Image (cartoon, rainbow, N blue to C red; front, side, top):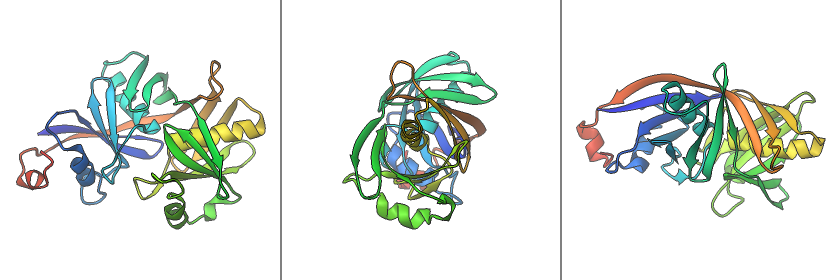
Length: 254
């Protein structure tokens, strides 16, 4: 049996499994992340000590997931394997995290890099690329349809984040390329939107509302191009997978 953990950060949910050299994690992601037919989730996190790898539901490995690293850190923290303030190694570099109390974890996100302005919006990189679009009444956007088309603006694909200034906070919706749909939250999207919104409003702190909950964002005092992002995380349940089941072996997962 292989043990797994299910966790979520503001509605962005993940399956976490231990690293083993002979596992095919691409095939595992394709199988385990299917909703209704398996555990279901927005991503697969492979745990190797304080190092994580991340796979999207389409089986593609990407360098970073902001909510994923916060959930992974929280799991290690409650298990006593990391300090209250520690770091996790990702494909986008070492990420500093801190347990803020009351199930809230903050992360110093990867450095923001702004790309060229497009007619559709602005390209912003925060570990992964986002097309960021400011729009009124984002509740009426057909995220699935528009996101699918706009996720192909960059050659390698990109996420798409729409945001609306609500005065006291920023509202956001995100289409994720590897999920092929809208997620309840996306930390790299929140950080990208926060960066743009804070520059527009000339502020160093801001609140963001995703469909899965609220985030707090602040510019890092040492680097204006890095965002400290905090939000709720939760470990939902733990379980086990029948490692020796014929079905899994036929799929080439084990």
